[in-house]
Every structure is written in structure tokens, then in C-alpha cells.
Image (cartoon, rainbow, N blue to C red; front, side):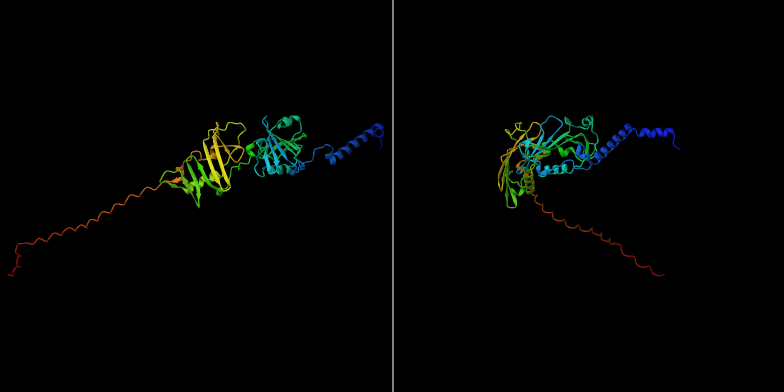
Amino acid sequence: MTTAIDMRWRADLRAPVVIALGAFLALQLLLALILGLGGAGVGAPAPSGAALFDLDPEAVARVTIAGPDDSEPLVLERGEDGWTLASLGGVPVRAGQVARLLDTLGALRRTPPIATSDAALARFRVADDAFERRLVLADQAGEPLATLYAGDSPGYRRLFARPAGETAVLDLPLALADLSNRAEDWIDTGLLRVEPEQITAIAGDGWRVARDGEGWQLEGATEGRSADQHAIDTLVRSVANLGYRTLLDAGAESGLDQPVLELDLSLETGTRHYRIGALDDGDYALQSDHLPHVFRLSRYDLGELLDLEADDLTVAPEAPTPAEEPASPAAPDSAPPETPAETISTEPASSPAQPD
């Protein structure tokens, strides 16, 4: 049974104002549905799981990594012979290291945002002016291809990060070590290395070793001492695999004007001269005549080379074995003690008793 109240409600619902409001609400719902289904191209963030960067590794010609302080950023540049540290005199970078970084960045996928506010960007250290690392990938013309701000780490191989131009803080599978801004983490430390078989002679202060067939000859040792082939082989391997930490800054005091050690190497392909000086901080500087750089070495890198003397490469002569003393003649066996002779009685033997 229809009441008067029902009649009034039906009349109100058919009122023009109510119909207009309903149509407006339906339009809003329709727009929300459209934006939710396909609004990624209308300013909305890309969905989770999408590639973080649309990156062609071959198009990247320059990588710049800045740290949180005001120090000069680390700059890597692609050259004809591979990647070099442009911020450190063009010294080569370890083979494959930049390629691995670009592959890692290209494999990153978007994660659900952790936060989006300006306060959160500063708190997670991913703001434009407050970050732990700022990574910029650029092309040959210097145009940026991708920029990433990396901040605090919530766990092992995890970093809070934010692509430039966005407000979403992401939790990405990265480590700050992947984005190191220290030259020593990128520099190729094998520029001084040579195959041991290529070395034909090494000369130091007061000693010289030279390959002689399958062995080595030694000059400068104390007379009477012979070359220790094992010790010389160890020396040759140490010189052949000589490493370093990084390059010395241009213009820095090197101590090379008063070297503590000089080495001359003869190789099958030429020669090298190493001059080594002591630094005030306990490290050492090394300059080779075949490279333009001055290298920083630690005491560990040089090992025993600093204190090496010719006799350290020798075997001490064996002490003469004392002549054996002739064995003393064996003493004759002692005669057994004489058995005392039986005492012969001088008394006449008693005659047998006669029968009565």
C-alpha cells in the first residue's frame, strides 16, 4: 500500500536537481574507472613491476656518481678502448664493471611506493638536495638518459631510491657499493702486472737476478752462497703481480725525488723502471716509465721488496760435516775367572776298616 510519504520521496527523486546530481556522480565514477584502467599515460605513475628505466646500455657514454658531500663526483666515460675514469686522469676502469652496473639498472623493476611526501624524501635521503648517491646516465652529447637518487638502506642489498622527476620512494634491490663514488672501487689495478714468464731479469739495490735456462742466476750475494731458486721465483711472481690502491692526486707530494727503492725490469718485450717513494701517511708512491700515472701502494702491496737484500735470495752453504773419529778397537773379551784348583790333601788316605 503506497503511503503519502512514499509518494513524496518518488516526487523528490524525479526533481531536476536530484537527477543532475545523480548524473554528475555517474560521470565521476566513469572517469575514475577510465583513469584506473588506462591512466598510466595521463600522468599517473607506472604500475609495479614495470621497468624502472627504458635504458639502452649501448647509448650510455657517461656515468656520473655524486656522494652526499661536496667532493668532486666520480665520472666514468666510454672510450674507444673501453671505460675510463675521466675524473682521475683517464685511467682504465676494471673490465666489465660498468657493463654490470648498466645491466643491473636495466633489470630494475618498480616496486610499490614507500612514501611520496617531501618530508619522506628528506627522511629517506632521496631528495634533490639530500641524498647518499646521485647517479646520472648520459649519452654521447651529454644529455641525461636517466637519473636516480639513492638513499638509506633498509636491509641487505636494498636501497630506498627515487627516479628524478618523481615523488615516489621505492625499495630497490641495490647496494651503495654498486654506486660507489670512490675511484679505488672502479680503477683497474692490473696496469703494472705482467706475465712472470715475460720477465728475464730484475735488478734492485745491490742485487740482480737473471733468467738462465730453467733457473736463475744471482749477482751481489756473499761469496760462497748459492741462489735459492724458490726464493727468486717468489720474488719474480711478486714483481709480476704488483698491485696498487689507486692513483695519487695530481700535484700531491710523492717522495719520488728521494726514492726508497728502484727496480729495473727486463722483459721479453722491453724494459721498465720503477721508482718508489715514501708518503707521509705510511703508503708509497710508484712511478713507472711506461705509464703517465703515479700509483698509491700500501706496505702490503710491496711486501718484502723494500727490505730485500741479495743474501735473502740465497741458500746458506752447508756447514762441513766434521770428520768421523775412528772407532776405538774393541777391548778383548775378559777371560772368565779361573776356577780355583781343587786342594790336594797331603794326608794319607785312611785305609778301609778291617773286619774283626
